[in-house]
Image (cartoon, rainbow, N blue to C red; front, side):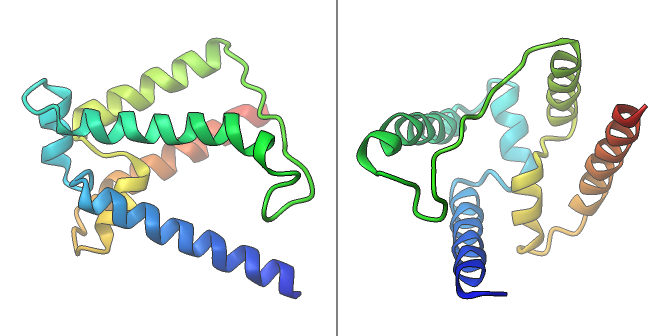
Length: 139
């Protein structure tokens, strides 16, 4: 590994730690809190999600205007999004799974750091779903 690859890996690790810490502080790593939000009993996570959307929106809009190039690449990339049947079905399945167990992949991984090993079942289901989709997409 060269110095650029090491610096990218360290910055990615730092961003992941910061993200996990933020999820933990926001209590999004607790499935009960998420389920209370999804059943309209507690709207605290609305502020968390709204803040996340605002940060991403501002970053995607302002970063290319303020910087000549990204910090860890030589140019900004376009992220095309395509809405089709597969996207709709995948989003629906993700939402139903999230609604049933209150677990999203990022917070579930962060919650492992708190010793919530029961979430390994949810992460196993997420991994299995991703594997099935990957195998289905190859055919």
